[in-house]
Image (cartoon, rainbow, N blue to C red):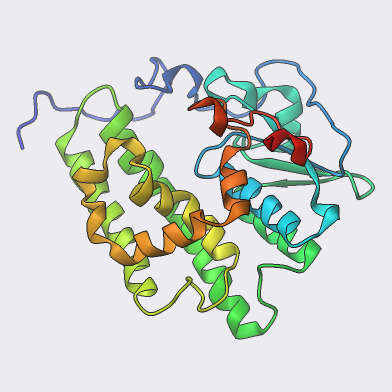
Length: 280
């Protein structure tokens, strides 16, 4: 690899220029709100604020799966947060999630309302609240949580690492693309080897571990995320494909993928969801 220039880090880094790339306008090295705006609140106890990204669909799929089980108390309102427009930096959203990332959940069924941020935490909160998709036997629960936290830890390597440098960075940097491609493929191989021996990640039962991992690995092998299917040779991960296809055939998953989705064909969009009638 040849370098066109050599970068020497300063003694103290200062934010003097935008980072560049697709999301440069909303990237900054400080937290907190940028504008005053309250979050809307609908008629249900559960209020979700999100976007149908790989992280966002974890929450909507989970809620739709709970409703598919007949748990009426899992009815929810889903409000669109357009992260490209910086809506995650409103005073209302920052009050719900100080990290300004989607999804974020408010449970108004408690007094005061319970806030839950980080997609993995939302999955566990809902699983424990409604007693579904999270094993209670200690060893099985540990296995499930291990795969859940595996996904939470691996997502930045796929998104902020591989996705950014391969698809969004203002210039193609060979070292960065090679580094994160290697890691993305290693992670796909971890999942593929596990699924060679199991129907789902934790065995025969579908759990929050599958919901979480499907959001990212399903997008990689089925939906050409980052236009990288050929580059990553995703067709070689046959067990991941089999698993992702089975999950995606579930009616609740099909509904959950549409919620808070403002792009794509009209029939795939449900930008806001306030009841089952929104899918008609």
